[in-house]
Length: 126
Image (cartoon, rainbow, N blue to C red; front, side):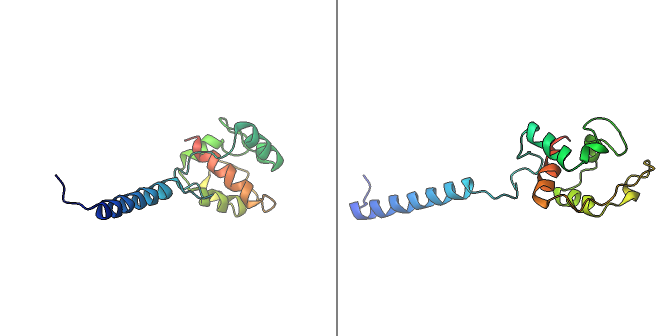
């Protein structure tokens, strides 16, 4: 038989409960940065289509085929981070896509939060 007094047992149980609560809190807490998996889209397909159209992305890009610019799947295949895609939309680097005769123009009008959603969606295609 254990030699624990009721007070020691209660204290040990309480400590265990605190530890469990802490672990549960840490495992359930999240952020808007999508740290669990950068390629998991936070937006539905219908909503992403609206964003792509609103921000004129679909004038030059399609999901699976080349148009004026590379397909979104081709962009995803480059394995750029979400942050890098955002940078490249604001400040394109045509040397990254030498097979295209029309360089992408900077898109400063695209709100960063919408661009983040678009970039996460692009990465989910890979």
